Length: 348
View 1 (cartoon, one colour):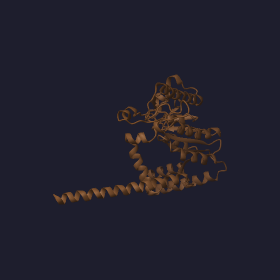
View 2 (cartoon, rainbow, N blue to C red):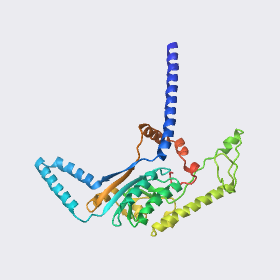
View 3 (cartoon, rainbow, N blue to C red):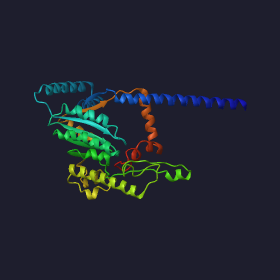
View 4 (cartoon, rainbow, N blue to C red):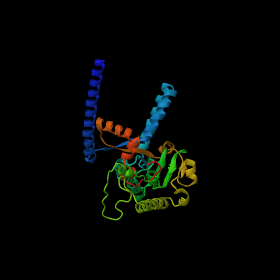
């Protein structure tokens, strides 16, 4: 029995040491990540999707054809490529960028560099396709995302938004900027609404004789708080702010998609592809793969991606933060109403 007790005691000490080491390493790495994000770095990666499509076709043809037939196919293909490259006129191009949004729209850091890179090269006869996947998030963050996409249209370049899974709330705010929106049949679209959640623990603190002083200069510097006692006047002002942001959201969508009946769709509801077509929230039912595959036959299609170097420990921390974000604590600490107060969108 003493042996078992000694073993358990040793195991507890070992676990404590390991946890302490992990916490220390995580803290140091987090500080390093903050310094790294503000340091210059990163580069643009460009992939020609026409070549990728041809490689897929050749892989299938090689498996299905006799060796002699496949070699003949490759020779003819190379001749055609050389002929096209010798032509004096250039084909119009399509630039593809992808935005996968989270609550704070952290993907904007890459998006702004990708848009800038495209605008240094794009001509008026070119086109930009942005693949959007987001269920919404902080108002100011997604507003900046929409502004980045507006830079493309301001240059007179056609912008197409492609929605394969979801572009709701803040995600749809960004998609609405596009000249044309294509969506997969079961993509989730819309959710033109604003939501805010503010937990309040004042009664719990009061029950345990804990006083919280909320000091402000300005009548509405704080409307609803987490620790202080909320008033009906503050609650009314908070709702007034929500309504104002909702009005701005509706105005933005109306300016960019004037055919949309905002009285019907600006209720915070979301719709799947076909229903979104009926409400004129999107223009065409089509996956981004189908759209780009067709474009490869007529244009040169380039995927543009901003890549920032990351150390293994930084990737480990991101995975750890992602796991935390799946739980209730992670969602609360992630910001939402507590950090930015106002978030457009259902689940955000």
